Length: 609
Image 1 (spheres, rainbow, N blue to C red):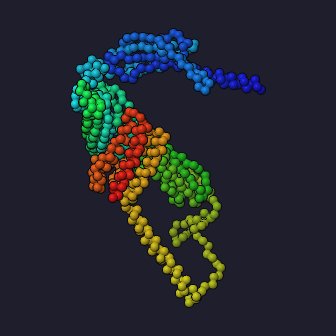
Image 2: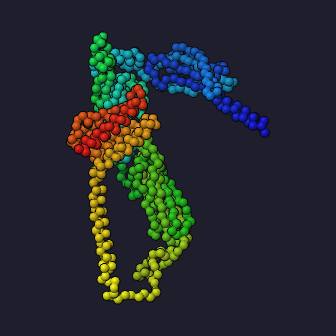
Image 3: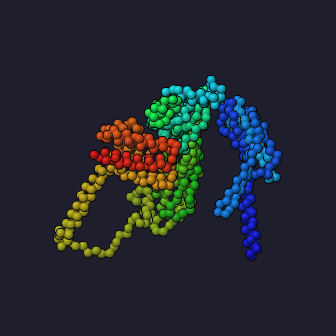
């Protein structure tokens, strides 16, 4: 038995070592380069027992050098366990010749006796800047120009607003993208005021917090670009609708070359000056076509591509047992805005309101996923019943026509359950037969009852009158309390204002927990919710209509001093852009947290007074 255990442990150790020593062979290169740029193409294999390395045919690039071979090895000892790794890298120096997109196939090699092929790499080659020799020289000239200039031109920094479609139908989804183009290296976004998307139902596409900058050739020049925000819009009416311009306030840090040390002193010890720049995106026109005539009578309002299916939990049951019919509408489009199809249950079924669950995710084509609708009904009498299929009509965006889908019908058998559920009263008042539950009609009690005559001790007594007075007083008190409570609840604005500080404190507590867990993105999102939510509740302004301009105006109307207003706006700005700032993240998060709590407390005391 002992030998068996030793052999088993040896096999486990050997298999673990085999998995750990699995050889890989990978290729790597930049995703984007500029015509004339030199770059590295590397092939790395994680073993030193190699031979017969064969590079692929490299088209579209000049091979300036290579392949050069380098070896790497590494040994680590952790808690007495020794691990080692080794690799060999074959490197080429290439130069891009022509703009376009190129694919370099994988290379081959024999590693540890096995033939292996690496992955292929895709490289996008951008044209040179107009008037520049290559990307590097142009970048240098741009930097020199920026250093000598005291302003930032609209060609060096701008923001575009683009719609994926400008000719759509009602409820047809399209994507609105705000994208930053810059040739400046030191850039900060101070404030952004987006339009309210009047006439559209909007949903924002979630994006990563840290902006990813990539090179892009645009109108003859090379820029670094990043997508600022994206929205999926659903037009709610036909005609020509407009997306108003978005307003941005940005700061650009520009280097200043000066031999005078006093210039650096008066610039805060730095040879960089800050330049404020206002940017406005163009107005976008969207032509919204009405849905064609001839809508089906059961039109659901759906626009997109959909399917529908149904299922039932039981076809054989007893009276007073529940059945559930589930409808699933799946596809892509305005799923959340689709009306619920109606199931026509038999008349004597007790039917409850449907339960709806939207299992969707946001994509560029709209909402993709399932809308699950569950109907619950209870048959009260025995028999065989037919539940007809559901008809579902929508506008198909591809064929530009209406389509009608239908689910299967169900035949269910209901047996008699406990009780007199099938009791029938025939020829009731010479009308149709009336079926009732056994519990709905009680038998007449036939026992003799001795009645007291008028004038007995109970009639006219104090107890007799209390039976009237006490319920009447209770009703009056209840009515007064109910009216008072209803009046307070009806004043939604007042309730929101009273609870604004409590809600903000609750959110800041959650932000403090996220801070201790070092969850950076969730922390900044929660602090922003606390700040915007507090001012929304306190001033009774919907969040969708909030902006820093109208916050400032409203706070002045409430008698808040300008210094406190500025402090509140600075807290918003610090929170919005601290996540992008370089440096110590924990220190920045602590600063944002403490300043936000302090400004909410000051604002609460100021508005109360």
